[in-house]
Image 1 (tube, one colour):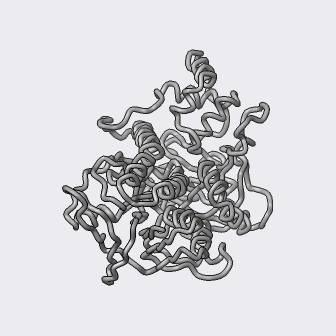
Image 2 (image 1 turned 120 degrees about the vertical axis):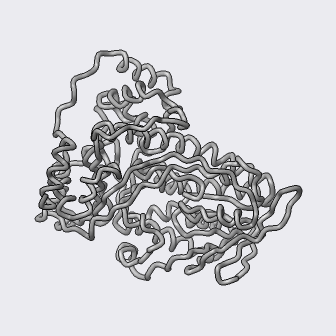
Image 3 (image 1 turned 30 degrees about the vertical axis):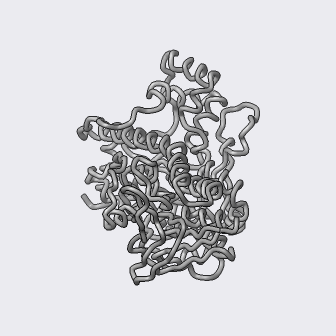
Length: 486
């Protein structure tokens, strides 16, 4: 049985270790961070210090694709996080009136803080006899040997402490930094440029806990699994989590200096009170903040050349999670895609037990099939939001050049969003895209779906929906400035 070294102990690395170890593969996970503390998962997760994973302190969702992956590949992990206070939210409660449909069981979201899910995954993988997790271990490079003209074969890794760890397969699960790129460059292996597309957004987030455990919600979840909305110049969205905890995230343009003050609690709260569907959720009599407002810049969308076969592969070197593909976190696909890719990559490794060229080609095919459509969609979605928000705030809108064309024309997608408000068939298709179960191209290939959308696209524009109005950009800036004394 081949020995696999996985560099990185995040969700993708742990899911891959869990899948391989459960099939008897020898696996060693090398993680540079600290191990989690012992004790109940929810409490230990709050005490887990992970300075190398700052994004873990921000809001995450596990959408329907991620839940499907856990149900099929690691049901014990799903059961464990539910036992620790996570919940499954049924998205069909927000569907237009109509009968149930096949596939509705898939339309759920797991609400759980990322550290809790990470910790449960960690314990499940580490409990397997064939899996070893080594913390405080930094990989400095690859052990390579020549393999034919200009080719290379991986034989293991070397750590920063000089330990040489042999392996038949090395998997880069090091996250957004994708450490294997620097390893290959240092070894003199040419690495082509990755595909990249900007996100150019930033997020301000804060966690809260309801003061009345198990009590009623302060307000409805108008988005099925969330409250709030994505407006013409900013977003303000609440996601429930485990154990009466929830997070509110405000998205803005990074160049909008006035909104930089959202990092202060007063300005953040003022913006929440102005935002539709959120005011009741920041009532001090109902909720308590669990920490400061944290700000993070959204990373660019990236599809790694090393993962997709756009270069001669290094035999035995694979990639998973963000080391293979990064999508704009604003759209909530990353963690679910990471789990899907990891579990499916385990199937590829099982089908190609000898780590030669066939394994590299099969892994590249998987990345192209699973990840490429969502990378292209993320680039389009990020740019569309940038254009919309910059236009609404009076900022210049740069020309869109070199970006992939959307799989579905904007006009048709806008019509689908409109139709989804009243048509249950279209609603289900749109939600399957929003939760990563189906690509836009897949749902628009359905003739009935397409006909329903076209009927809306060709009809006169419907009246604007009634309901709470978000603040204008000027009103939001004024509220923030008032909190700053200016």
